[in-house]
Length: 425
Image (cartoon, rainbow, N blue to C red; front, side, top):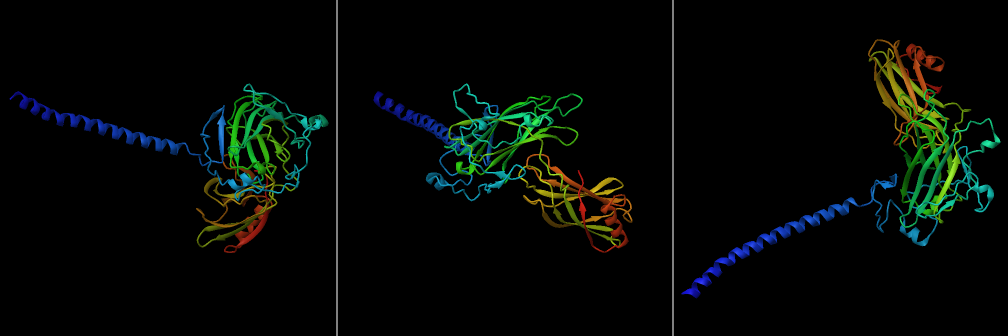
């Protein structure tokens, strides 16, 4: 009877063993499933960010740069393999042959070994042993201060350029600025920062952080632009605007630096450049431009119809010679703003056609205490929009603004249009 009892005990232990193995198998399956999910989520997060540039601050990448071999940001792989100069469909393009520094950029053939090409350039070797070549370009963005001793010194900007052929990435490192003028008369210092734009189409606009109370700011910030073929670099230009932050009013513009990239070779590695900052080149002969406005006062409904028709001869906001204007309309009652409207942005034009109508309800009888302000602004993505010009229409307005207002009061229900010269904002 003893063998029978032992066999029964063995049969009783089998379900227990099976249960233990089943529990371990279930735990392993759940763990494996969770690990696979985490890997998939991690792989998704490591994909290239949907941005044209990667901002590197103090050597730390905000976005990962682990690009794979797939096409990035509309880049044409066939053009890369064949090494043809054809640019992709969405690329930046402009014929720079007839351009100069007053809004147009000349395209010249440069000699890399010319002594005159090496002025104002400081070659360096980094601690890691990487090569920083001296700029061979002779297209200077500023006039030598030695030729004009009376010209105000605005300091110098130090930056470097580099191109990564494997990732098809154009990198601009804004290192520092030296000898900036003091924009704050009380503290005799400035709060500088730098805005950079890739011309001609101004698709890429970036800016550094603000450094407080310094005339020699060390930024050391790198901006990486992906999806720009190397053959296209020669058609572009870099525009740096050096500003001083002002908490209570519009930021002060210290100056600018323009670097046409035609003739600059980046095949030898990183290129360090040092350029003097020049006064911002804004055409004053043509004034602030003109604005065509149509007004109609409906006395029966006590409404004011405002039509923003056109703008012409707007001054350039930067060296590209092209602004992105729009009009902001503010309605005031007894010097208090009670309503505001704005038009759509018109891209890259000094002569914009808006044809946009706005209807305002007037809170009082008559237009004696009513005035309308028109602000023409240049749209700047990622920063404060700059006022190009200003116009005020009302009973107390001078010049054509007051005359136009008197006409709509004398002839209600009639649409009256007039051109007005814009003044400084």
